[in-house]
Length: 159
Image 1: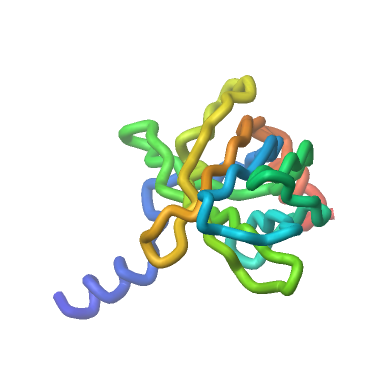
Image 2: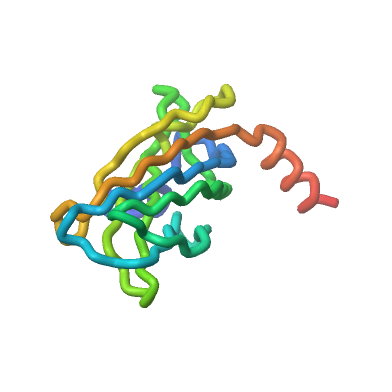
């Protein structure tokens, strides 16, 4: 019995289908709390080893206007029985000019995963550092299922 339990533990995606998605994010602005005083920042979006980063922008009056679009490809696993996606966390980190991290936002990309292309939806989320709010980030997120992606990857591997 011990052996079968270990075998299952090594296969976390049993009864799940891998689906590749393109996630698009438009970062609008960062509004900093009054106690936060920095002059420039950028935003780093990470998911595992994948990353995308905005160019550095000025902070004027506690506000940084980003106007940046970023995209990442991610594989999400969908429970075949329930039709829901497993959690897929990503992080948006506010980076100061010095390279120091000001704070971050952790989001679950599964919220935006759909087999139908999703329209961008605007969200305002708190940027936290050690559990303390240092600002808010406003962004749009949308996703597109790349239904041909795994089929093409399989054909390329065979050919």
